[in-house]
Image: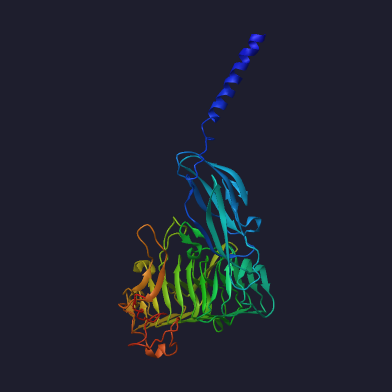
Length: 503
């Protein structure tokens, strides 16, 4: 019996010996040489602007042991301890202080950093710093953390039921929705900033009057300040939903408003075209995932506006009355499934007198007369005429009239054999407007920079109607349209860049 027990114990002993020997791999033979130091993938982690009381997404960096022996980091800690606005995760553990972190020779570990600053108590951003302190073999090394913390008003499912004027002292972070009630007027003063959280939207049942100025425009954008790979989220479409206007919302005004990176721009439900739905002046709307402006039987006036970059069309107008003066309507949406943009035909303007609706699982068509006028405006898409052309679809028996006067457009009346009300006067047709910057960077590293100002060689220079330009004598940047030979087509007046002085 005793011999049988010994036989049974042999595999257990062998297994224990195997474990002991496998653990004895020299990993605890740490270097004690103070010259064996850590190296880092970066010496600074910067968060730019962050909102007080709200957790940021993580940023990460790597800590390397490029030495020939294993290292034991005796401590990793935040210099300000638990008073820090930052928190770290070291090798899978979250907190403020860690001890005895091992790194094998020629190996590395990840460190994750996030921030959640307390309210600063001020109206302007507050600069925050701290250090992650690494102590190894008596040597101290640091990685700088920095951010600009901004207090904000946090609105979750906000409903404006009476006439209100918002404060512009701090930005707003909108969760879920902001709804302006049917009998309310929401007034937004210059310099107000709305950061829209993912999935949030603005719905106007009453009236909105957003009045910025050139020096202090109103900003409506997503609330993320980090990056996807090397692309700032502020340049990525689809960060929030968009702004919709109810059927009986009239008299809305947007002036010097910059609006970007939503799923859609503005959506206008069918209305009474005899009443002004909205007036847009000096507005920039750019980088949207779907339609930038979708309007059914509305009355919209736009002047000195940039409408640019949407996966679907920039202007989809289905019935109604529209006037666009000195606008740049340019679709150079970046098609990329890799980055989540999706593909785009870079459509520009779609004019219809028919609206297709789906109700009770049935598809029906509603017809509205359409009248659309474009003066001194520039319309261009980045693809060929078959997709980025102006698309005009007229249903028989219903009025559809349009006017392009002193415009630069991708296609003319020859593309639309049905004449009824079609007029193209003094237009430049099919010539590239020669924008200043359309995507920069080397092959494989696009920087997503757009500048729809004209180059000196642009055919759109000095050929706009002077009579029309007198009604809008300054461009969106305050440049005099009559400073040279004549006004330019589009929202931007060409101006010679200041020469380099070497200073």
